[in-house]
Image (cartoon, rainbow, N blue to C red):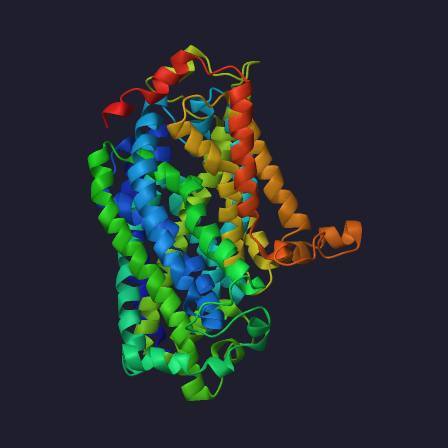
Length: 549
């Protein structure tokens, strides 16, 4: 390994990141700047920030590894990523979120929901849920990047985790969301170039598109036996309809991530950073192209790595890396590609990790500081916002702990939590951790978020009922029913003496989101119809100008 060249590449990269972070710090002068980038973000920056936050090492390393073991059926996730995560998100959710957020003076996603339904409980409960659940997602993103640094740079895994966390923490802590989005744009550009090169290389080294795909199809007899037992049929074919593998792939991986993206707090807040719908429209195409290239490349390369490893080493990918799916993409890159590209891809992977982690740390920090600590402190004996709070022209400045704000303190805590969890989690966890977090967010937030944007008859009590029922249903199923988590956590085994309460197909293989979202939606609708509507003043404030857009 040419450590001199590697050192130069890293020095240049961190100088660029440092400079961009410095610009963000200089332009961050208020809570509005720190939390929503002053609502003046350029469309290119917004699109790449959204895409880079969406696509992390979890997508590249985690889901690329899933494709390496199980094949190209995961490509259906690309369709949902673009259609739901970009088109529906920007066109139907983004415009209303931007306008309503500005009307209500919201700085975070929990505050957006809280002000829309005039309930501080919704704000701080949402903040607690985000702060408690997101460290797992942050940890698996950290793991994805650290695994590549371990296999490519021969760096100790624990040291790699620490270095990544410290560097990201530095610019998020002082630059806020401007720091996050400015560096996202830089890192997203690097990611895009790196993945384009990787896609071209994999087909070039395997003899072309037709030859590579045909070779993978012809290797179906080598498909992992455990996957065949669950209903798998090969790397270029979909699993048997109704099999455990089919239910897991469709409900957890494809639907859990594809639909779950709509209710991701760190993504929803991006819509509130631009000044008009024109910027959202300009961001749409850029974001769609970016996400399409990133996800397609990861899943195709992961699947085709089987051809490379078998032709050169006589083993399929999962066997060559010792059974850890999270190591398939990093090992393929460091083994198959020229040394110079390993450095480029390392930067791409670091950029993917840093962009997503920075958003996660920022979201967790603002959840703890703004949505929990300050929301509870300013409750004033009432769960509702005062008229002055709803009509305030400027957001209230945050509480301080010494020389830093409570949100900055929350960011520090979030970094420490992700490090501790990252050290404790087992192998092959990246894709599952991502799916579970997105599924939990979808179950808790999606019906309430939809109601906030599109149904004026939703009441405060209905929103609370939907939020609580979705959260509790998903948590119960994760702990006692869903096989992958119930067996891993061991709580059900400890209490009832069995791995899971329902041991019948297909129930233990269906993602919790499939059950929890309808439960949340039913509670939201029924309770809203049985309770008094929200004050017309709050509704008028929320929906002001929306019908004209």
